[in-house]
Amino acid sequence: MKKSDEINLGEISDHKIKIVNLSKTKRQMSELKKYSELKQAIDKVEEAAISYDTPTKKIELSRQGVSPEFVLDLMTVYQFSKQEASRLTDISSKTLDRHIQSGKFFTGLQSDRILELAELFHEGLDVFGSQEKFLRWLSSSLPALGNTRPKDWLDTHHGIQMITDELGRIKHGIFA
Image 1: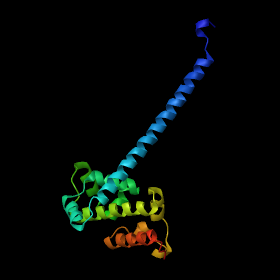
Image 2: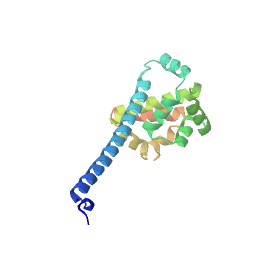
Image 3: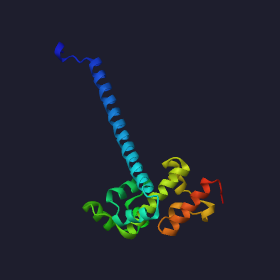
Image 4: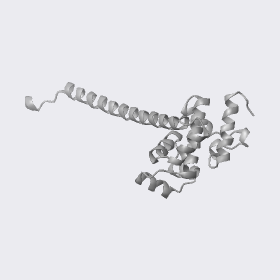
């Protein structure tokens, strides 16, 4: 074995450590990016929910329409699948896809439902203090709702109102 053929194990070890550290850094950056995207989505949904403080402002926003990006943010913060978002907003998966691809705004009853869900999310964050706690509550069976999950009631206006009322009771310490 020639001197030039000798392998310096210290150098190999240093390279392995650098590769492992680089891999950890990339993973941390990826997690930070996901967190940042989630935080931005939450901020956008909350901003829309509180941007109207009167019924007329809510109607104006609904008439202007809701962007597909906002719907994607709403799906992100609620952790809804496309099928679940489709069911809750009463928008077919194909229509949802078309709007997202074309950038066409959701209007009318579609935007009303989307804005109601945004408003509910804002209220849930206010009551529970975190997205994680609110989402866990949404997915839990509750005796006050006949041992059903709050999430199961979000497909109608009255269901959303019922869950909003339940959040109000929790906020004020009135448990059923």
